[in-house]
Amino acid sequence: MMARDIVNAHLSGEPFRALLTDGRHDWFGDVGRESGGMDAGPDPHAQLLAALGTCTAITVKMYAARKGWPLDDVRVRLAYAPDHKDGDARIERQVEFVGALDTDQRTRLLDIANACPIHKLLTGPVAVATTLTESP
Image (cartoon, rainbow, N blue to C red; front, side, top):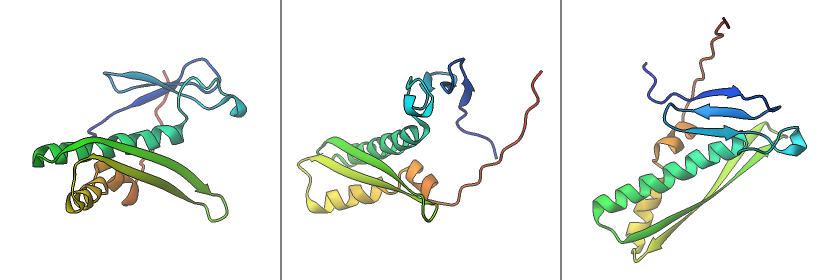
């Protein structure tokens, strides 16, 4: 399988600040000061939520545009809730569709939100293949 998206991450000199790049964009990830970081960027959980929120909003907006539906805005609120007792986690997502949509259109857009690629990735089986690369 060939990788479609590639992101590189490396620690950038601060205790836990990671420089992230996809070859076109650069950004930081970090942890808060309470965890020993510099709070120079979103933590990994927030970045995961951001990916889901972005994908949800874009997927829904694209679908509505193709259908010619009056969707003015998509607002997505996400929260991550780890369950330390069972080891499971839960993402809570609230989606708001702004526009003169009827009930059937809103219901269909919610179905589309649940079919965005990042939602599918998070809810389907995911394999993470990790290899060790030797440093020069």
